[in-house]
Length: 530
Ligand code: XUL
Image 1 (cartoon, rainbow, N blue to C red):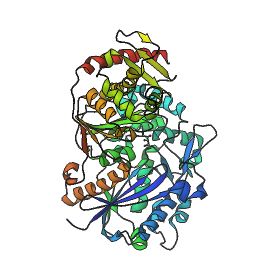
Image 2 (image 1 turned 30 degrees about the vertical axis):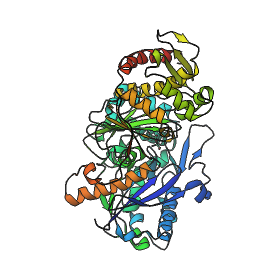
Image 3 (image 1 turned 120 degrees about the vertical axis):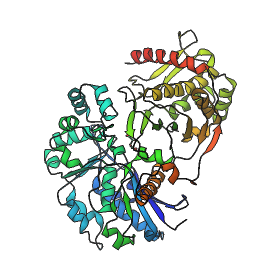
């Protein structure tokens, strides 16, 4: 063991965070800046500005720069040994775009350590307010891209996802249409991740292939920009983007400003930054094809590594895998997660999770053939516009509602049958599942997950998985460079703390039949709620 340290930066929607890992793969320090509370002069709520139209959402790009100076000051006050940091990498909220004027690299290379960073960079932004992932104002641009490339499935086959409003290409298309001067004045368009890396390296750092998969611009197989997608998006875009590069690549050394001002080692490597979901895959150590995470929070998500991308226009996203450039990762997102489970808990289990768990235990896998679809809010997967509840008995007949025991099992089984169906549609084949988020505290829910998928379920804390993933990727990139070849991420992470097995895999053949009925019934529910 050396005394090398590795720094992970997480530039998320609401905060900027730094975690420091030692050579023993343990996180030893965790420091952050909250945009609303610590930088009130930007008047953000939750780190963002929402326009009156309810669709346009941006963040002031210079706020991220100011946050970085403050974060490093706090690290210095906490006696972080900057000189021991061998490599830094980072995670950025996906999809957000930053527009930089010619001359930015010159400004970065000549930064004055006696002046704050933000003031020196103020003149570099061609667009002050960066559109971020919460923006859904680009419906017209999405339609235009799908029309130009031959439809939603064609866009998905090419870029990994159908055209989504928040995806960066469509956001860039809108900027080029509504803010022509800002677009024309942009020499470089970065993502949040590559922008933060650019600050650290004091030169342009390209986007990595994994975060670039969230742009609707890159061919996920060749890992190059697709010319037709670029042409359909905005004029002269190729030269503004730079070439996407593999995620573990060392992009350069840390800039002089950081060496002189904070005492970083001039040899400190800047490993290409990536998106927050890719970094979470690294942070949760989903190292092998078949390792899958189920995150149960306000919304539920499922993501994991897969060998062959199977993009779908109806659900999910395929990204290039950030820890293994030859494989992929898929992610599906649900709006109706814990709030829906809580509604049923309140109605049928007296508001008590323990009772809810006991009721799950007292009912048998397959729920006697009863199947329910519960949507408190419009759903993303599958697309359901009108929320509602749809209950079917064993004969497939619609019933008004289930009795409390049946309802408790139906809501949980329904949610995970949906995950099994839709994750399979994008190529996910779980061998083991890591459950995270609030719902993972409930043993009854974990048991149903293991029954529906027939695989063991592990539990773990994912609160800082993107930041941890960034620190792990810093080490990964550093090791790959040192050894002069690609080193498997699992090898590099050997000895890191693992996760605990909560439930053994229980094979329940009843679900193999039920999943077919579920798929049929789901079609009728989609039709009914269109
Ligand atoms: C993913 C997405 C969000 C952002 C911010 O597609 O939009 O998860 O990455 O966390």
